Image 1 (cartoon, rainbow, N blue to C red):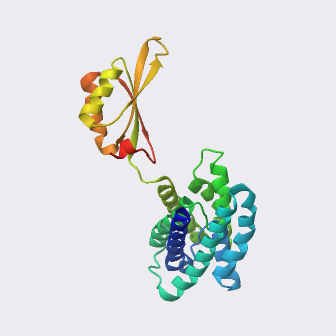
Image 2 (image 1 turned 60 degrees about the vertical axis):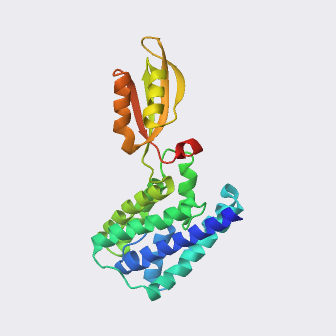
Image 3 (image 1 turned 180 degrees about the vertical axis):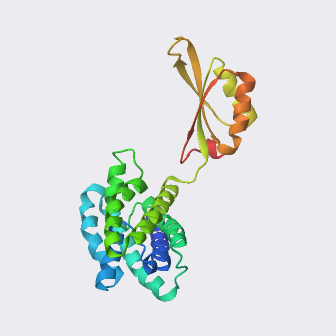
Length: 276
């Protein structure tokens, strides 16, 4: 129940942030969001029917399609998130004025704020758009982020926006989503600046001990063998913050100047020892 309440809280917050981005930046300036939300915006513009109604009606079939794939909990949270978004777009429209009418600012800030809201909802096992369900499913099978998949789908929606509004608005909409999907990835995957380090050396044990003593970081030793020399080596694995990367290089050079170092970006780190 505690986890459910946390999910509901962040889904509510995400829906509010997304509604703020839509009604205070994008919709009043005829710059659309993508997916079902984008279709709802265009449908509301053409028919003059309340945007919240289209958000609910057009999303429901996709959410029930997800019942078997994602389970009841996901669908319930998604229905809740969509309902909150539909409610908040009306509340924000009535009580908060439009922030700016400068198209470039609308695309950058509106897209970024929207991405934060969508990312919060996605990170809490929910969604506010039927296309996000498809994106989540595809992202589990293929090496593309949720934001990238959504962007691919939205190319077709933005092309339609060119006919509904004009091509300049469609281009600004595309820019807004380029910003938004980066923001989505930042929220879903985290803003961690940790680095994953692999060091291959003939002096692996000495290197590991130096890292423990001088950087106060735990290490893992992995047996390795040179592909060309066939010689036995020790690989040292550790995770360090980006700010300590230069110091690590100095420590490695002081022990073995010929060591091979591989550095990768990582998004999240868990573990009691690392936090200490």
